[in-house]
Structures are given as structure tokens and as C-alpha cells.
Image (cartoon, rainbow, N blue to C red; front, side):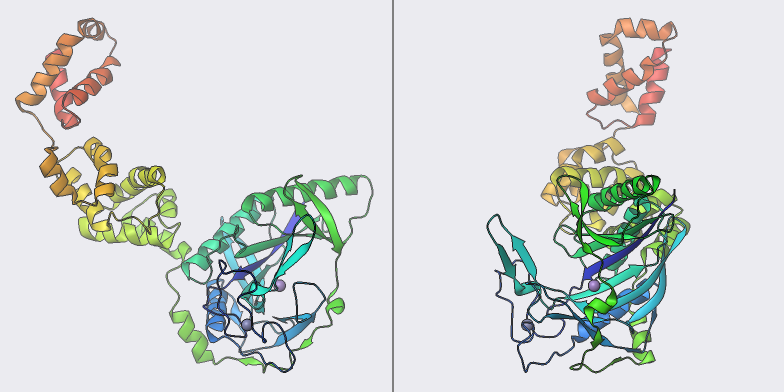
Amino acid sequence: MKVTVGIEVHAQLLTQTKLFCSCKLDWQASQNSLVCPVCMGMPGTLPVLNKRAVEFAIKSALALNCSVNTTSIFSRKNYFYPDLPKGYQITQYDKPLAQNGFIIVNNRKIRIRRVHLEEDAGKSIHTDKETLVDFNRCGVPLIEIVTEPDIESSAEAVEYLMKLRQILRYIGVCTGDMEKGNMRCEPNISVNMGNRTEIKNLNSFKAVSKGIEYEFQRQVKALENNEQVTHVTLLWDEKEEVTKPMRTKETSEDYRYFPEPDLPPLVLKESRIEEIRATLPELPETKISRFVSQYELPEQDAKILCEEQVMADYYESAVKICSLPKQTANFIISDLLAVMNTLQTSLEKLTFSPAYTAELLSLIENGVITRKTAKDILPELIEKQESPAKFVETKGLKQISGGDEIENAVKKVLSQYPAEVERYKQGKVQLFAFFTGKVMQETKGKANPQSIKDLLLKNLG
Ligand code: ZN
Ligand code: MN
């Protein structure tokens, strides 16, 4: 049996204020402190469209390869719910802002049916005894991004969402923070082109994956038992890991959509759309291919470096200084990310500048220090925010190559391990690595690996 998935995403736009009034956006503000007569839907108030939200929505639509309509219409979607004081949501219905886009996920095209602008509703907070409402979120600008049913597995759904989030972050319109509800996903699932069900309330990639998987199995079982799959909206129960029916799916008639009488059509000049297109940064796909061709990196490395724009920028700034593209990529991926992980810091907060990374890599490249020394001192360098060259100088960490110091260390090690030397001579050549390690220790990691090798070979006869 074949599963078909379409996904609806609501992404919160990073504007300063709400979509139709000047109330601020601040998820940390105390409940019901960011409200005004407009977002509370008081009689006689009028909505005024947030220009920045429109720009962000257009930017998103263009980044998702959509065509932006020069005229789109706001509509009222009427429904009753405690967290919706107006009794309707201003959204876009038959004439959305943009349509017919796509993004590429693992070489497959996932078509985007539409991208439209709408306002968020408030939040209901359920406790044991009662339900409370917080209206701060009423009127917060969202874009809704709807795919065609092109997704063929739960894994692909997650990859699509990660790709979408990456693009929205690159263009700076949404934090994509699912835990905070800044990006909310509602997949709809059908098996063998049958009726589809929609899951609400998914706020993590894990929940998306498990929810789709659960729903797929449930529908397969129903079909095998000759039961009908009904068109319903389901809730995902995070604890029990099951879907539960929430309501039978409303049809659009239930919402009595009609054009919002208080807002004129949103008319955009072609030239304005092109102006916004010109502000789009280089997007992940393009950046990855450029990194592969320009810096001759393996695709996997390019993907890691381009995961976030700040990391890609960090990489390029460092390479610009040291001209060591391969080494810089390896260093960031295997050393820097690991240390940052241990120190629980992010690239944004990292005070170890790209210039310092470049300096450190040049020290290795020019034979001043070994790669091992670089690795060892990295946590301290990051902590002290010191110039690597200066640090190496004051700590006397310069690499030693050839000369008596290494030879003495080699001789010392060989005399300390006569039994191992004997076994080596009898053919146990794996012991070479053991001797190398011991000499490295003896020289505090400063010995040039090639010199150790040469001198060991010479002394072992
Ligand atoms: Zn307001
Ligand atoms: Mn919506």
C-alpha cells in the first residue's frame, strides 16, 4: 500500500509588530499584555496591513519558487473558538498571495500549491480545572505554506520540513523554532489515494514522523478490514503516541468565507516583486553546489557547512584569509563543531573569529605546529580568545622536526620497551603506531609526524 502525504505549515514571521495592528510580538511577555482593540476585534476598529509582513511573505514565496500574484484578496474565515475573540480569522482564500512553487528534497521536486498570509489566533492553556486564554498571539503574522500530496514517506516529510525551515532561516523571515510554535506542521495522510486525514498539533520533527507512521499503519489496517477511512482532523497524543479524532473535517462552506470588507485587495507592482527578489540571499541548494565546485569539497561536507548561513559565512571568511579550503572544511567539521558542542556554544556566540581559525590553520600548514597541537589547544584558544600565533609562541608549542630532540625521544622510548621492540623485529609491525604514540607523548605532541616516522625506522633498523 502506498502512502501519500501533503503538508501544511504555519510559519510565524519575524516582524516587530502584528499583522493588522501595532501590538508588539514577544513570546516572553506576560499573558494578555500585547493586545489592543484591533486585534481583539472591537466594533469600529479597522485593520491596517503590516508592510514588512507582506515583504517577508513575498520573499518566502519567491524563495520557494512560487509565482507571486499581483492581486490577492484577504478573506474572513468564520468560526467560533474561545481563543479567537473576533469570531473570524483574516486569511487569504481563493486569491492567495502566491502559488505553484516547489522545493527540491533529495533530488525530488515537492510542489508547493500555495503560500498565503494570515493572522494567528490566541492560545488556549488547558489546566486540570479550567481553560485559560492568552490573546497575545491574536493577529501575529503567519504564512501558510501548502504542498501538493507529493511526499511519499514519513522520512521524506521530515526532510521536506527541514529543507523548508532551512530556507526560511536563510532568508531571515522565521526562526523555525518548532518547540516554541514558530513553525507548526499539519500533515494530511492518505493510503492508496483514499480519504485523507489531517493531524494537528505536531510540534517536533519526531512527532511528525511518528504521527505519519502511526496514521499510515492505522489506515492500512482499516482498509484491510474493509473499513472506511473517514475524512477527519486528528490530534496527536504525544504521550500515548496515537492519533485521536478531534472533529470531522469541516468543508470550506462551514467557514462561510467572504472577502474582508475592511481591507482592499493587496495589489503589488511587478517591479516591487522584482525588487524583493533581488534581496534574496544565495539559497542553500545553490550555495552547496558552489562550495562543491569552487572549493572542491565533497558534497557531504558542503552540506554540513551550508546547514546554516552563519557557518557557511564563517567558512568563507576563514578561507578568504588562509586559502586552505579543504583544511578549513575539515577543521570546522571535525574539530570546531566538536569543541563547540562540548562548550555548549553556538557559532553566533563563538568569539573565536574566522581570522583566528585561518591563523591556526596556517600555523599547521607552515609546519609551525602539528595538527595534534592545534586540536589540543583549541578549547583554551576559544576560551581565552587569544591569537593562535601568540599563544603558540608564549607556550613554546612550536613543532620540532628532525634534530636531536626527537631522536632522543625515540631512543628513550625504544629503551623503555625492549620487549615490544623485540616483537616488532619479529614481524609485529602494528607496534609501529604504538611507538609513534609514545614518542608523540614524550615530545608533548610537538614532534613532526614525518620526523618521528623517519627516526623510528632508522632506530628500529
Ligand atoms: Zn493589537
Ligand atoms: Mn491557516
